Image (cartoon, rainbow, N blue to C red; front, side):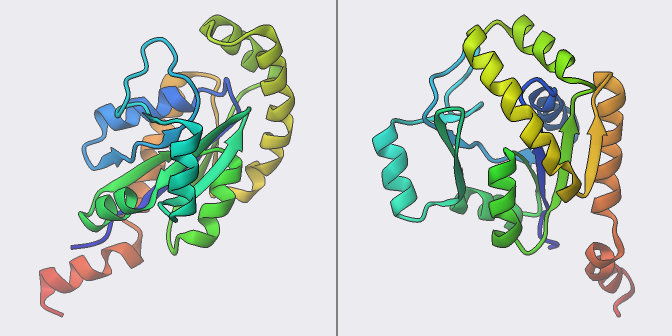
Length: 201
């Protein structure tokens, strides 16, 4: 069985990456997700074990010390991490694993993973980010301003990614995301084993 492909999605707050991530998980059969761990408080509608594994600072620190994260980072005052064993297990089953990871985490994964696809979701403007964050209604004005300041630095990292999707329209952006995942799935190096099986080479 061909090993699955890690697909990393990053972007600043308000870019729409979480919406695109959820659309992909819900509608693309060959894609699954690895639930990250975080110390942040759940937002309205968040489900523990589905959106994130919500843990305390002490629990997170213990996991990090034991090497149970393949990457972890401090983001906007909270900690986030990707479980090493969960990710590796899903990949070995042949699933493409979609990971919503900040730019810090993506930088760590570039050294930790042999093979992965990196997609940056970019907002059309900072004003669009601000409007989306304000409409979301889950952050204070102070937090929104902090996220907007961070967005400028995050967008500078876009050049390090394999693909950039500028999210002006969510449906158009989702079609682009699906196209990237499909194209990466059938690249020649990934199909080589399948060809050998089909033709007994």
